Image 1 (spheres, rainbow, N blue to C red):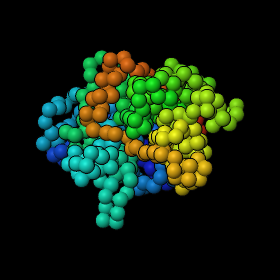
Image 2 (image 1 turned 90 degrees about the vertical axis):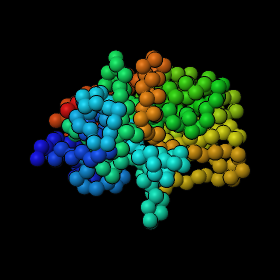
Image 3 (image 1 turned 135 degrees about the horizontal axis):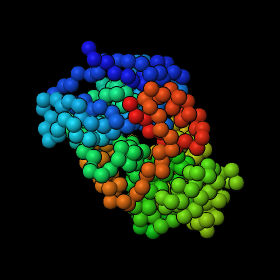
Length: 357
């Protein structure tokens, strides 16, 4: 049986490069030869044991590649075609999909609701940090890459771009809004770009890394707040003349950023939460106005599916957003363990790494 290299979760603290069989292709599947993938912050949660997955699973959920083999029921695509698939791979026909929430496809079980059911790559099935990945429900999830776009130009579409944009979309950002984005990692930077596209006219980014603050400014931030230079809430309230923000987007996943994002809202404002939290959250009485502030707290899991991917690549192709600067480092798949070491420790100004088999 033919084999391939893959980054495999062994135990908390260990993701290693090893070999496993190349997957068989079912009628609804597509086997994609990976040309570029990357490491996500969620993969680091897996590495640290903060998010449980099965031992032996191939990690990763951001694929760019070429169709190697199509299932017998998959039409409209050709072998050898360049494609991406979203990190979230909805079937298109589940209860969650038919309710309009494909990101939660597969979340319902006989034991009750389990969030993030639509996230399968590197969570419940083998993922993309490998030479090949099996894409389930290919008709719902494969999206052809437009001519002229490089792998790195579309590398953010499967997860980071889709997730970041969804922060602005779920927060219902409107023309003329003031938006605060807490943490300018890759998702936060994409949230900045999404808020700008949605019509926000004042965007406040919160971070402390100079390189991130500079990229945020290029993507649409009007103000940057360095959390090391004073209380973040005080700084944002000063920028807004005490009014607060219409929408705050939490893109880190900590109690501190969540609470600050809540405290800077105007009356009736919306907190759009994108962070992956590894412990229980507490909602402070005052920040929540004792439940009487007409505020909203919304959460979003990265929208997936081929139509979402098509729309995001159209944004890239038309020059509305340039996310190439987010790729700061490049590794071969053979060096995936070194890539994890760099990325998990956030050394050398890393934002995103491109991994090429």
